[in-house]
Image 1 (cartoon, rainbow, N blue to C red):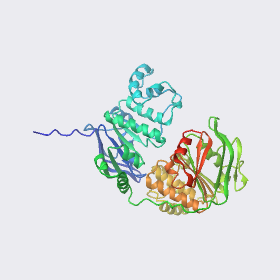
Image 2: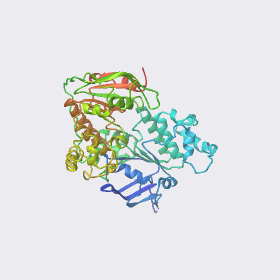
Image 3: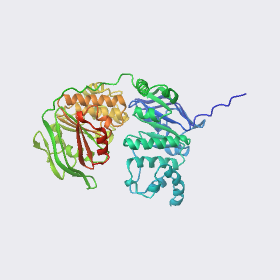
Image 4: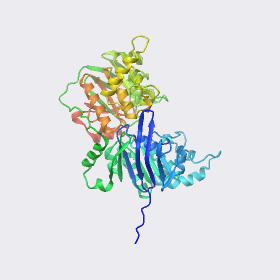
Length: 507
């Protein structure tokens, strides 16, 4: 009796290559996806994950290779082509119209008629929103949704458009642990109903927990794959070790162990300051923090609770309405950004490409942007020499100092910014999400560098929304909730349950 041939994968990419200038982002990548499968795509920053996702979603065209859907070759020239074939992308940064309702946001991408048929859209959207737990909010403005609900809205928009494939880029990066659990329950339900899901993440435990298969990219090539059956036969620790071995040619850097340390003199004092956000609503409410040399203070909190306003107030970018900020005993409220930098107060933005660097400038030019300049003319030879040294020291994956910064991966841009700022030996460093969205090796490298900088006497305020990014390096953790300091925990008295409650707004 003749055996029936297995059906082709729902989505299959073969020999995909893509180059951006001197950077080879994808190098003959083979990747496939079957109905009802969650397939995780892992790799260090710059490994080619986001590029492959952009090609599958029609945002980029590959230089070579082929994409097939249900065994049939397809060619995408724009995202709309991929949507037509049932491939929906859910990006890391949401694309909502905040003042419009959920229903109106869904309707925006469904057609090009002059008048929207909201009744028809409601009929199509109702079963999808019910499945995702959003039906009761169908007429609410998106601005009133939590981050987890906005994430589900992005998924709903793709499903209402008929997507059989979901491409999720770092879907958990801004979610609380409870919201992650809820999202994963939804993804498992969608998979059981036949939806095929690709999830790009840097969190190895999440990939192991949710995936049927894990494919690892390294330097643009597939370096290995683990199936659900293989994962079931080994302990989670061994699975993580195997994935790390596939991801990195070298072992993870080691963060220096905590010993008995004594904090130095008080460097920066934030004394009962208040500030308003861009809409003139209260954002900070009488916050007080003291930063000592040799100490890393972690600032924990869900995004949107005043973290960005606090960074900008310390940097001199945002005026304070009450209170005072002092450096080494002298008030600096009247000083501008440049004057505070001259004192040694440096701030790292969480917007790497928008505020922290200039995409069209070279690596060497970006590494020199904020350094004090002597004379009128630029010393190009010195800039190149310094850039080569920092590229090597920080393991920045760039062909050379002349490489366009916008062609680097997010992790390598982050290392570039940190290399530039820390090479100036700051006395105070305010670091806003320096490891956000980075792979395990790059994040560990950055934490090790921050710890070393603190050991050399720098006072560091480290702001992260994920506690796992704070615990390895912080001497104290402070919780910011609704613009107020809600609690403070020395390293030897960390209470994760209480910190979680305070982050969620409990008193």
